[in-house]
Figure 1 (cartoon, rainbow, N blue to C red):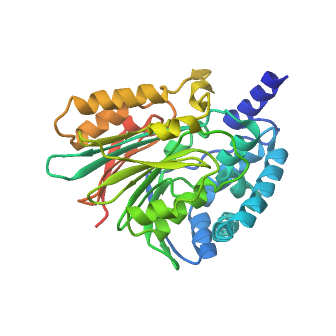
Figure 2: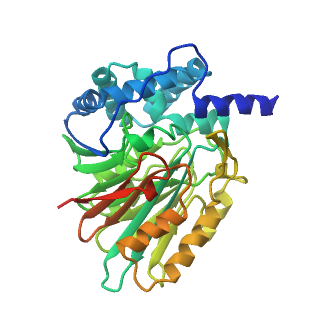
Length: 378
């Protein structure tokens, strides 16, 4: 019975099937969009929703076709109430999501579900394989850092590569920042402010019933931190285990964090850091879940896609780095490609000292094999 229920949930989330509504057509897109968002949380959300209305309506329609849609919406509302009771500052993100809903003319509950999907899956459907990421930081001989990051995700695999967005946030409160993301999302899963770089990787810890959602955790860090120390201090205890990569112009750390414990890893003596989806700090090993979500295959393209195991990705990246004395932009591309799969929906390279950001663009995943567009953040 459990296996049957698992299969129903998996197919619901991956294929988003289940009702007789006509299949929507994904809007044509010319590539990476750059969108400025200014004002109050609601105003920022409204601008977001208005400018990405077609894409958000498409995703909203697909969400409504999930077999377990009504049950998931009920869970999302219950989780929203629980989060607001524990973290009153979540109200700002609720207002932003309501703004997206109004601007895009879609139900608020669908935006809420899209943004809390990881937490809902974790709480109720445990071990569903939907996310995984890889990242590294390398310090070259001149002291300058180079950061590479892949984001892998098992939902909307065909559509998300077609609609990457660079959001330029200018909020009334806190710091301005950019978020490399997708339509409808309020979290800052790959983000850069004037002083820090931020990205997160899931590192599945033991199951919990409380904690901050990823969208709140990432926004609190990037919007209200001026340096690495403040970013560490601002990191709320998460709903699930995370490896949080934080960097400034000269240094980088990985905050390995679970709902109950946190430890730091610094750039090693050989001048690099590697981050995938497991804890590497000795004192965090006991916090790791017994079986990682990525070990389960995902049905895509009429077959089953299995991510490269988290420890295998770490090994591949380590071997690539150790074979080089310096890491150039082209080397970084090669490293990211070596750990990419059909689930790789975002690939970026960032040079903190020069404030140069490169974002991969491709019509299909893995996006790391597409063209790379360069942005000067100065």
